[in-house]
Length: 245
Length: 102
Image: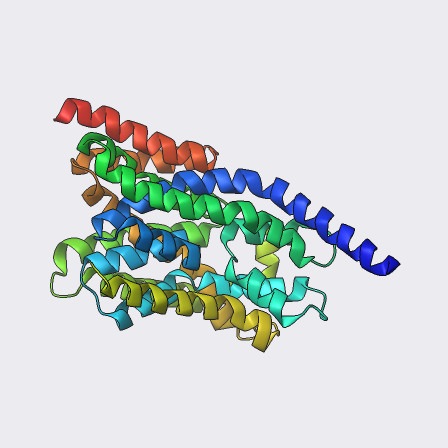
């Protein structure tokens, strides 16, 4: 009986610690997902569909890819391929988190923590000392998920009410976030900087001069080809990561 | 989009979930293949770069405002501004420029 009580208070303190650390994440999510909601609205989704998508996917770039693919009339298979590529980095993070768990951690916890493995929550989870207690992640998720989901829904609804001028301005918010994600690592790593530059140039050329391929497929082809070239000619080692990180 | 959107959302949710939990549940090992590991390392930067430009110029009413936001975002990121500041600044410059362009 005594052990059970101790475990319960442990769980509670991990949960509340997670909630506290999750608040700035949730606020950021709210702003970004609002912009994402505007993209969803442009793709013809209603607020229920967009909120549901955010609740299930929890992925900015992934959802942006899904919405633009849907808008361009891409097939389910093409969209699935695109979302897999946009979310490929989570495969890496999942490997990292699997090392962070106590090996005895129940599979149920592994599924639940994995479901909301985002860039930000991954960062929080990796920053704790020792093994990751899943209840810490649940606390962060308890504030981050509502922020992300409600923000998306409001983006769809208020996207309908806002004047075109304001919508135009808000629509670059998500791109601003993408820039904020890719430029700092590019600053630290010349190879990343080089390939980010190459990506901008080739993407522009593909957009303006290659008209016979669907825009979603173009993104997939460019991502795979450029990343493979980078990986082949400049293999990335963990030592560099430590240096850069 | 209509009800078909739900099929898309369900499939995309499944794909995303599998990517996120596969290493956590089934594989549970470190990736050894250097090429695959390097590929996964570069993918997020490349795909976000490809999705950002030139799409940012098509998102705004005036492509020039989008281009200005693109340049401003990069400059702010280089001098070390945080994610929120960069995102908001991009919106603000588009709003201001389009007051003059239109």
